[in-house]
Length: 147
Image 1 (tube, rainbow, N blue to C red):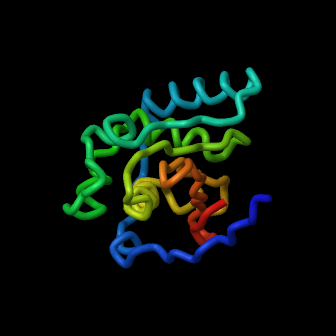
Image 2: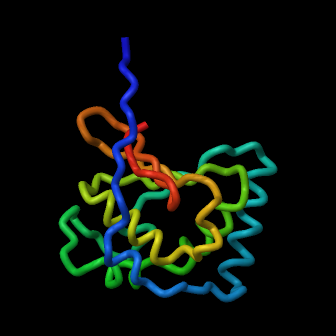
């Protein structure tokens, strides 16, 4: 019988709280992202799963990134930032798939690049290979923990 694991509260890092609002202009990337997300939603797709290293960011962190959240946030590819931003206001679930053992860093990177107006929308989940695969919930206003 599986025992339910309660979420563990993980506050955002002090560094993540200091980032200024990052605005994404109404760019061709964002317009294309909105079209892609609308198509996925119209086809009944429920989950958008994106790899982090060498996909959302243009570098591989090897799970041991030590250069700070902002330096990694600067490596987020604009097309994936646009895609995530376009997905958050919809019923599409966004999932970050990673082998990284630094999910809090990834959470802080996403907080750094997402506008605060999305704080109340959706949940970004992390799929991590800790023992068996587990889903790590992320919501900017809720505690982070195991599902």
